Length: 111
Length: 174
Image (cartoon, rainbow over the protein chains, first blue to last red):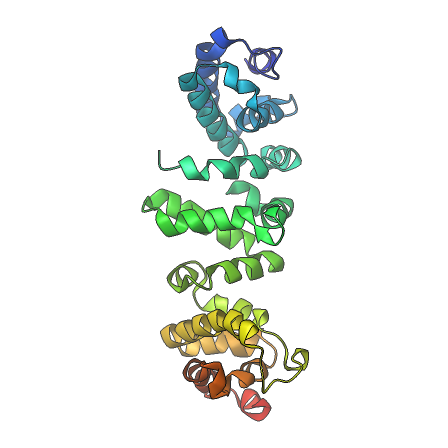
């Protein structure tokens, strides 16, 4: 699942507009799976955090429909939040400086 | 929030600036804490600030940002803020003339003194105990503001009365 997600979203070349709904489905699964360490661990060391961070911080996601883009970024933030509770997940978030991307969404957090 | 448990996460949050001297992340967290009524979000923002305050530089920067929002300062740090408010004031030796403080600097320090007085008035002995245990020469830093020209005489006396009331050493310093 995570390899497929990264393969379809890691950069502008791999992200296609028609993949929006597929990515939403995968992220909804990740957001449920990452409630426990057992679900977080398979995502570690594979570039998942880097991809989630790219999605919330880089403009290449603009190729998606506004609704998909917003939902995908919201879910990426949720998954990153879940992963950062785990010790190794937190370290990956620190290494990729997720703090410096995520704070920009504080404005939207009542939405 | 979770990332700020980690030392490097605290540093990332504290050091990030888009404009020189403006800690953008801390300012945004405080801005949201100021304007949101969402209970869960408020709790997360408060915990984030408390996590970041474990880094002394973060505690000082946040105290500066919160010092003109004293209700929030109280909500987040309570009597602990006595330590950082006091640290933000200059030492006596740093003034060219402690009897004549530059009016522009005095306006900057006024927010710290007023917040300090609010916390002292609210927590009394508990706040005074923080001053005694966690600051050095509390009375010395406050002393220049006894000068009526600063307009901070009332607040300064309130702080000194609380601290000197429980500590002979600060009486001696004063």
